[in-house]
Amino acid sequence: MAIITVGIDLAKNVFAVHGVNDSGKAELVKPKVPREQLLDLIAKLPPCLIGMEACSGAHHWARLFQQHGHTVRLIAPKFVTPYRLSGKRGKNDAADAAAICEAITRPHMRFVPIKDEHQQAILCLHRTRQGFVEERTALYNRIRGLISEFGIVLPLKVERLKREIGPHLEDLPGWANRCIGDMLAHAHRLDERIGEYDAAIQEAARQDERSRRLMALPGIGPTTASALLASIGIGHDFANGRQLTAWLGLTPGQYSSGGKTRLGRITKAGDAYLRSLLVMGASAVLSGLGDKQDRFSRWARNLQERRGYWKAVVAIAAKNARLCWAILKYGEDFKLYAEREEGKEQKECVLAERTQPA
Image (cartoon, rainbow, N blue to C red):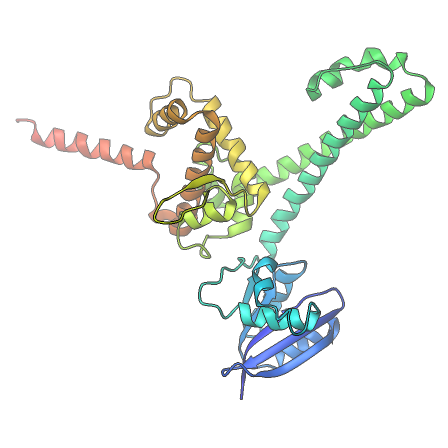
């Protein structure tokens, strides 16, 4: 019988492959497949459903297998664990491949969107920039900690630290002076690198029409728009905007029983980087409300007054995530509320002109 489902446990050099037929019987069991032989093995199979865990190299292999007519599904490792036959075979690569093969056939299983090379290249920009930002933060914290050993305590704000540390450098002993000077020079180079990556991300966002539409939303800048587009594509892996917000961890956890609904804090599941960008954008929206009287600003202001600052920030971030999904999903067919209001006002003006007596 033909193999219809294949589970592959990914690794660096040696892979495990488990394939079953339409009756669920194992037809292909290879616990050790060298890296250079994996593609040849899969290419010889008839078109089938292939499942892999979403780990290092998974998107690369998924693209290669799709070129040979296979349907590929990537699954989060935590969803594979319940299907592992731990009571019989324990934890090993072959058992993982069999568990993946079983898990991807479940009707309500959730899968990870497969990224193309352009999406992964854009995410490389974001990951590299974020690494530089984390390194810079750690560097300034190290500087602050070292100079405090010599009785020099400066404010936490980085700009004030860089401005006020100069006069204190001469008070440091020889080697300490050299170390702090080198770290400040390295931090300055990191600032330059981060600025270069910011410019590259902004240029990539401006060149993409979908990113430009996302940036029309309040609280969505080039960094957030390009990161969202690179992570979820056109949003076809999500049935609606709420699924995207749940994937981002912006929806409340539910602890309901006996017909009584209990909603807790947001889950904070999924991609922490995307969630932080949306939350920072929502915070900027609240900071810049001022006296704006458009529909969105009135809603955000009332929400902040009723529920408080942080709940309003999370609500705005969740709303932006849903609107981003709609923009990516429907493209030109989706119009923002501002565009709808403008069209409604124009329609009312035309009707008023027509009803005026001649």
